[in-house]
Amino acid sequence: MKRLPIFDSTLLESRRGFLRGVATSALAIVPVAALGCGQPLVCTDVAGLSADEQEQRRNAAYKDASPEPAKRCNNCAAFKPAAADKCGECTEIKGPVHPQGFCNLWRQKA
Image (cartoon, rainbow, N blue to C red; front, side, top):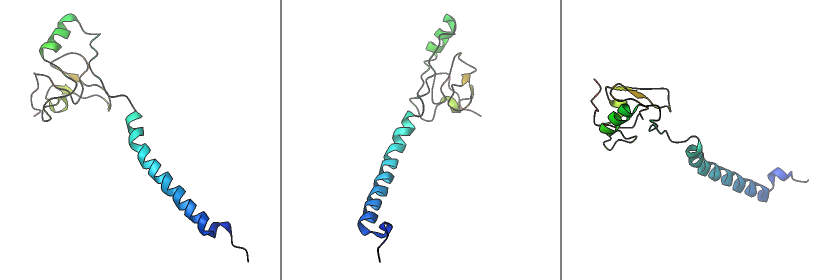
């Protein structure tokens, strides 16, 4: 009686190897794909602001990344969030504000 190719041990071994390779490749692709999904959020475009508003923003020392993890725009009382992956707003300074940003006007959200 002739055996079906599916039960051939060399074929099964090559399938196992193939599946193992596919699984390993898939795991390697996930982090790379996550990096390429979108551009990092940048909230420093002040082109639409007046010179006075830009100066106020500079005086507040606004940065897109907070140097103090406990003090970020998204936990500041003046922050107004936007949709996910969008820049928010601030009641203290004009222009786009990154949720992970910081400025000298930060105050704890109540």
